[in-house]
Image 1 (tube, rainbow, N blue to C red):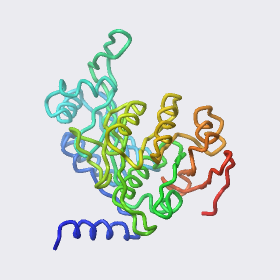
Image 2: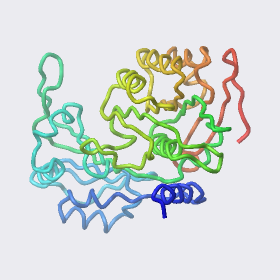
Image 3: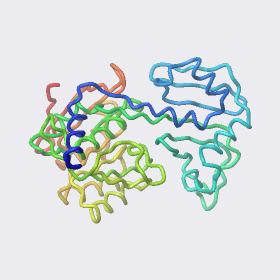
Length: 330
């Protein structure tokens, strides 16, 4: 059978699946934790529910799930923390100096390790992080089908609408954005959407979760990723060199970013964006985001919450000519 046909069959099968599928990436985290800590965690909590593992020298391990915080009866030694950092950095912290200046390390599987310790400053910027005393392991979760309910509102007749997704922190907007990228890139047969060229500007390595430049998450076969790249620079770079049909960015907000997005709009490129916020009134009150609405750049605004779990679809708005906003039935 032709390999292209096989790929199309697999993509169609994934898109037709009605159930949301969670991809468990916890195995990579196990490989960097000391055996004693692994045993304690697995004895106290369902690992599939873990969102964060917070580890501090001479303090108890703290586990955060979607619904609760668990403080484990185990104090972490300095040697254990050093072991974790050494494993995460593959025995070479020097190779991760640039990431460490930003306060984190991304390792295989797309998991992110937030770091805290002594900051060495130079010319007003962090030169290096020393004497690391605490880490926060954020478990990267891929949820296949997370955006299935949203897709019909952001695309129709093989057209993608310029969309802003509004969500409070930890309500699943990045997980949904990642799944949207995959669906647009691969194509989504439920709404007759053909695959399109996608450029992901992944400033914090959270969407594609690249490790050594390679996406660890499934963001689709037609997606290009500019990893660890400022959105203002990445949007312009993508337009000039990658010929995208759709640009995807997480957590926009600055005027410089809005200017770059306006350039993309004027180039005919569609955009899927996210922003931290509670509701439409919240984002409409911000000057930079109001400009996207008033200039008729946005076509859809999606509001999420955690009311019924992460990624709960609250409202869908259609932005009409002149900046008029209409709430759609969902």
